Each structure stands twice: as C-alpha cells, then as structure tokens.
Image (cartoon, rainbow, N blue to C red; front, side, top):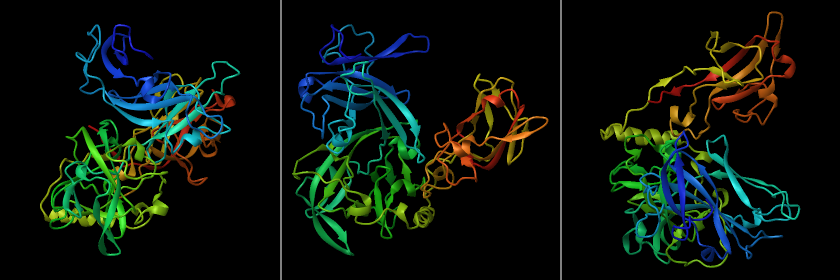
Length: 511
C-alpha cells in the first residue's frame, strides 16, 4: 500500500476495494506525493479511512529533516487527503498503470503537519509528530461534527518518541462563493473568479459604501458527501433571484452552507435561512469550485446585488489555491469575536424572524417547495441490544417510561432509538445541530423484592453514546446508541430494566 507496484508508473498506488467475501471488485489509481516535491527523502501511504462508501481519507507520511517546530521538531511530515471514488476509473484489469491508460483520483488536502497555524502546537517539549500510521473516526461532538483520531506507535523502541493519540475535527464548513458570482468592484461588476489581489471592491461601513483593497483570493474544489446531513454535506445553497427583495439578488446566487449574508446588523450563515423555496440546497451539484476574496479588513460586500461577507481568515487560508501572493509577511489568524465586521447571529439576534420574513416573501412570490418535507413521528422506537447481540423490545411502553425484561447473563446493554436534530425538525434557524435520541431520567433495575437505581449515565462523563451532561439530576440525552453498564453484583440479580423518558422527538421518517 505504501508504494506503487513494480510494473506501475512511479507514484501510482492502487487502492483496492473488496466485497464482504474478500473478493477484489475494484481498484483506483492514487498518486502519492513524490519526496522531492515535499523536501523529503521518502513518502508513502500509511493509512486509509473510509468516511462512507465513496469518500476516503488517505494519510501520507514522509521523512523531512527540515520540518519546523518549537522544540525537538519531528522529522515526520504527515498530510491527509480527501478523495472521492464516485465516477473514478476502475483499474483492476489494467496490468501496468501509466499516464496514457490511467486517470488518477483527485485529492484535496485536509491536514498538513507543516501547517504554520498548528506546527508549533504539534511539536513542543511535550509532544511532536511521530510515525503516525493509524486513523479512525472518534466520537461526534455535540454539534454533530465528526472527530478523527490519529495514532502513532514507538515500535517498542526506547529511542523513539512515545505512543501518541491526536484528535482533530473533520470540518468542511467553508464560507465561499461559487463561480459566476458578480462582486461590486471599482471597475464595475466582476466575476468572483476574476478578482485578483490589488483590486478594489465596495465595502459597506457605517451605512456608507467605500472602496477596500483585496489582499488575497483563493480557490478550492468541493466534493459532496451525500450521506451527510444537508448542512454538512457540502451541497451549495442557491439563493434565488429576488429572494430577499425585488432585484436582490439580481440573479441566482450560489454560496456554501456556512457562507454568511448580512441582515439586521448580523452575519447569518445561509444554512439557517434555507426555506426549501427561494433558498435551497442544490442536490444536482456534486462537485464544484468555490472562491474566497479577502479584503484588508473583514467587511460587508455586494454579491449579485445582495449583502454578503468577505473572507475572514480563521486559519484555513493555506488550504486554498491562491492566484497571487499579494499579501506578504506573517499571516495573522483572526477570530469572529475580535475581527468580524459584525457579530454572528448565533451570538444573539433573531434568525427565526429573518427566516420568517424571507419565507413569507417566497409565499408572496408563489414559489413552492423544491422538495416535500419528510413526515415526522414522536415514536422513538426504543429497544435494547445486549452484549450478546440480542435485541430486546419493551414489555411495557408508555410515553414517559419503557420497561425491558433482562436475560440472566447480561453485562451491559445499549439503548437504541431514532435520532433527530433540532435544526432539522424545528427549523434551520435553530442553531442546535446536536444529534439527539431520547432524554433519559431515572434508570431502575427491578426484581420481585427490590428496585435499584443505576446512576452511571448521570455520573460518568465519558460514557459512550451519551451527550455531555447539562445539569445533574434532570437526565441526559442519548445520541441514539447509548451504553448502559451493569455492575458485576447486579448481573443475573435483576430481571427488569426500567427507563424514564423525559423527552423524545419529533423524528423525521426517512424514506
């Protein structure tokens, strides 16, 4: 896996897909960075992680004796790329791969240990990048974002660095314009892809339009993850012509889900205003380029006649292909709290009011739903799965209580249920993207002579499948698959498990 086959062109690695019976069903050609292009003496693939049936993370690890770091800098350089297998060439039956007969997979850089923003955090007196060669999905954060855990080992070599685990957030939340968007500039309306550093664009400041200089532009390619939630999948959002008011925007405006529009002195992520009428996710677009333009100060700019934001560099600028290195010197990473022209509406304001205003306008224009919403149910479909894999259904099931009969030799159970996100069932203006199952109060073990409460979900912070506790004593949310351990002395002693359900649903019924 780390190197190409002898018969294949240098750098052309094969990624093989197997079926459940162990049969190779496809191969894809992946180009591994050449050591000379990364100032290294060696480089290869050390791990591959599947995010879904078509999306992979590929870890490349090389040796780089000049890597920067604070103290005891590592010689290992690690890069992680995201690739999409959809519509990729199957090279399984090609004996020898070369540039004439092979189309390589496209790859997008998502992590680089040489990243100037994090290199000094990764290489300190306490830790440094070692021979990372393992990668897995970690727990999801309360807001629904996925963590990725990297692991190295010391090969039982006392002279090598210690075994380490590093956790990152897998976050595709970029705020950008799609090509064809017209930006109001000094020379008139200019397509965003044609803006270059040094251009002057109009900026709205204290109610007055003035010119500000563009200091950086960047481009990146997005690939949609169709198995993810809409707001995290990467689908572009279309703001239809006239969606905001007459002539605003003056043509359909396409932006990414996290891109902010300006309303009522707040920046509002467009995902919070999707009404599936005049503002909707365009599912027909699976891959696309998108563009940033950064001015010398974060500001309000005009895009297709609508008020929008310029790029705020919070640390991901270097993952974009820049047209011109106009800005020089050390890059200062910015934050929304200290550097934004206006606050995010998630910090205050009334996103629901803006949503309702735009939704009312959509109805006035007679624009119907792009697609019909999913039906809802309050039925959580509660059941248990034992450590032996047995599925247990409730023997008593009320709105606020479910009782299960426990087999004799059960060491633990997992509480399973439907899941929902408040932003999906109550409206996108609700900035709560937690994946919720049910809110559990008391857990009681029962037998003929006594009842005993199980407090594990209230007192154990790191318990699989439970969200962080809000307040002690009022229950705790599951994420739809929650671990409930049984004490050794309780195994076989209690015949029933009773769960108090404080809140459940509504849930969307998937097709």
